[in-house]
Length: 542
Image (cartoon, rainbow, N blue to C red; front, top):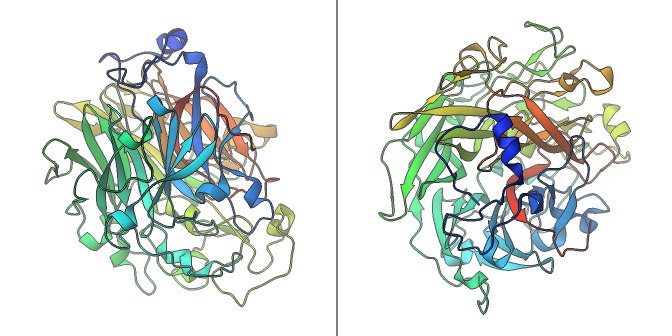
């Protein structure tokens, strides 16, 4: 849920820390009730669970910890039970009813919830109980979010049917309006924006919602050379307007022996006016994505470029043929090492605003189409080995793990629009990411998004230049952006990280799962969207 900024001026990091003790307004007009004291603010995210794991049913699909948790915290607690929601990505917090809303998300190796691809679930934080809030497939008059490609029984070790359907089925981001009266949801199936009234969440309301608040609105696709390549996902709310993120995937340009045309990779953000019920014809902001991004993996992440053992993490067009991603056929992934699957594909998954500047969160589709210690879509590869990290490291044929190498970009307000960061600078503010070879025009603003070697974990210099999982959370009066990421301080882990908006540096990191949690996804996008909530949950699970 967006929390409107309390001032238009920028806050330095020191000022933001000083303000951390002030009450945090929950909405623009306090419709949500009393303010939430800073010490009660929690940050929550969705946890994606591997369906094959024996403990999957005992896990929580939404987890959280105090916003002000110390560096290296592991104090995550459950908010919702995995069997009640299944695989969910988008999150929204309805503060007046203390309810978390979550949207169905198709991820390979993760099971959908009991109500399928179009479900939005409501979790009462007072009790920890989850119920169906709305089914967009039913309200939309058909399978508007697409059909579950798995059908009935699923071979969860291979999950072959899901590979090329991720990104095309299910729901993307969800967000609440600033007055909390409207829930917005992106449908990946029909590429439309849906709107739902939240009145049923209040006392005496009846769920599930039985009608849409307004007719679905088609999301513009004209930023892409081929409209078929336009894939929506992210949402943001700013000054009463809704912003939808669209990725131009360039998938139509891939072919036999060709990676595809990287010049057609683009991110676009369209503005939707809820009063007029229409999108602007042209994007509010767009940018090409064929910029350098450093290394998926480097043997010395702190070395000056070009670094030894560097496998580049530049974005590639979406690849529907699993054999290419798994290195079985040309153009393949020549950088793939033994059991790692590294084929970065951009997906604009979140939009946030910091005092007028636009922040873009990118998820790597590769992380959602691969898994942790799982097989390829080739069902003839069926090694009988335990589902452990050691088995994965053995590099046994068919046992591999994916890497998700997302990103964070900042576009600074300029006149009536935004200008993308350039070589580590944005809006006159420069960070030490200048000339590091990992961003637009040769540098990156949020330069400290590497791990684990980049943080000196165990004195190890190995690591990744890009670790983001694509979710963002920006609170007012805070000079920091929160994101989800792999390897916050351990290998094969996932967690939440805070970065300074002035210096682009890492402030603190928290770990949600690690290599010993075999229900998790290792480096393969094991976490989803981010939200804030007020106070502890009544959930009594994990």
